[in-house]
Image (cartoon, rainbow, N blue to C red; front, side):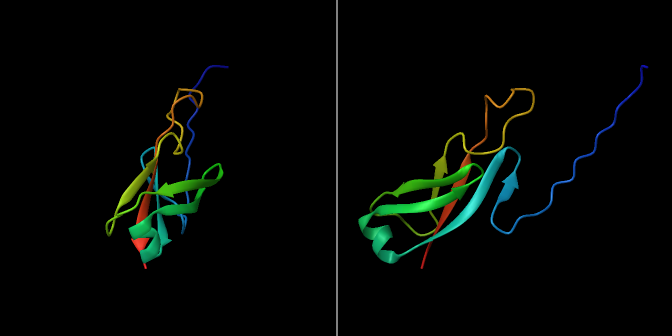
Length: 91
């Protein structure tokens, strides 16, 4: 039979991930030493843990981007994804 199908999707808030369209934002604490000298930190993404490089001389409230680690675009069968933006918090 023909007719209309209406689907409503509700997305719950998450304490770790914050969504902005197809992009995902998270906060990541780093030490002052990591900010000054550089280093690596493990970041939880939608698909698992990724080791992210922190460049030396990182400034307060810096953002780093993990390209293609966000939410898939509609109608692309998962081929195109948004980004995961990591907000570094120096502690």
